[in-house]
Image (cartoon, rainbow, N blue to C red; front, side, top):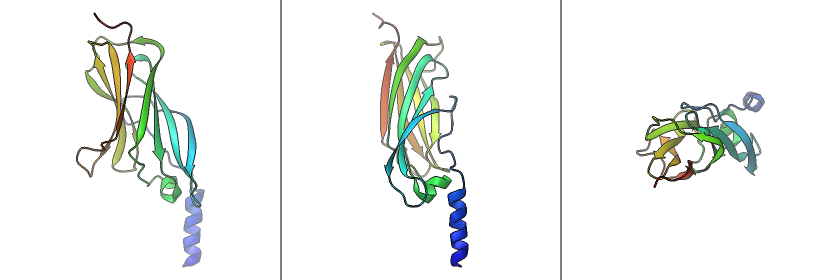
Length: 164
């Protein structure tokens, strides 16, 4: 029995890492900017913090950078681990900002899977026409708990000059 367990374990370690961040919403796939190893794991990849860039699909000239934790170990390596619901977002003007005339007041614009089955990290865009700013909110959903995670982060990008 022991040789079979070792063979299965060797097969798991030889399996390429499954992507844990894939686009769920209208936005394009994220661009991985980098990662930092945080916890050493003897078997499987280490726990890490990743930074991904998402370019807003409807508002030209705005990019959002989301940092989040990814769980390592065997479960993380094969894509079965649940990543923690802690993250940060920073959105910036990376070009000339062009806000469409009919921008929804609140819309989910990007997302990433934090669990192979139940949990997603989402970024919602909100438009504040009075202050002429685009607000981005990162938050998570969980199918098995009401209301999702209380952890969230917000970033604001000004557009031109404020209205009088």
